[in-house]
Amino acid sequence: MDPDNQGPEEYGHEGDGHAPRQRPPRESLTPDFAQHAPALARTVRLVSGDFLLTVNPVDGSEIEACPPTERPARPVKLTAAERAEAERAARPPVPPGPAQPTLPLLARQDEREHLVRLLARGRSTRLTGAPGSGRTRLLDLVAEDCSDLAPDGVVRLNGFGRTCGDLLYDLFHAVYSAPLHRPDRDELLTHVREIGAVVVLDDLEFGGAALDELLEATPECAFLLGATPDVPAPSAGAGVEEVLLGGLERAAGLDLLEHAVGRTLTEDESNWAGDLWFESEGLPLRFVQAGALLRQRDRLRAGAGAVDEFGVFEDVPPADPAEAYDLGDDVPLPALGEAAAPAPLLASRLS
Image (cartoon, rainbow, N blue to C red; front, side, top):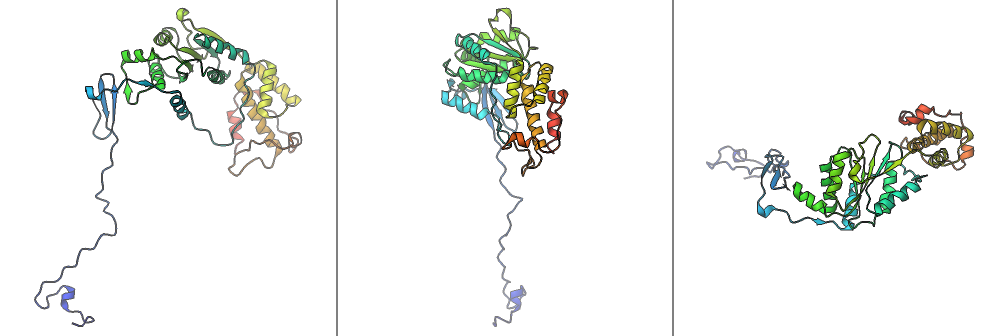
């Protein structure tokens, strides 16, 4: 047949009595979205005391008596390198923006040395200071000084919203390698009694009998406790030393403010800082915040070039500060109320 003259069979009609040819099925050009493999649900099995808990978000969780074959091995202590890696992973991410210079810890050397001496003798100590007194910063430096005092090193814990039992489990998991294992109370106490560490516990929220329980459960640990004055005191028989952290002297406060600003203060700024010292009772945080206000004031006085391509003020001081700060209209010093609570003023000038 002439290939240009198609017969009826090409169109599925009967021509020569033969059945019409069936066209082979065309392969789909698009995937069949109606048929796909179900997403695998992640199930977790963990041992808590004498029970095995299976967490299944799809089919439901279940708890059963732990079979002998599922019992975890005895926990082993982490090495120094493993503890350092775990501490590094637990640190908060670095905030965006240019890195701020680390300010010195002024007028705290006596307290720092005293705390190290107490911990070296195995004496648990409570450092009591108001919010903004530099308590956490001092704890950080003392922790560095005590890194080689105990066989299990320094363990950093936070007591915010934590009970005595919570902190015992936090201490256990900070020292032992026990993934997916939460021991029962008796087993927990057995393990924490074998921990010999300097435990730096900031933001402690309890004292009295609860603190006695924590100290009795960890006889080989020396605790450095950080708390505010409103937290209940340790009991008389706890044997905890008390170190009070007050405000800075006026000269130290002005020195800290100059470090925060990055230049020498003018006479007006020194007088303003003296009033701030009196109103704030020498809290270091107030001078750090005041330094941020003065840096922002310098940028406003300098005028042009204060904003980078992201719309954020640059933290690089001008090449000639004395000359740059005389440019533009004079910006008044912040009121003492604004220096005591600077967040609204700092935020209002960012746009």
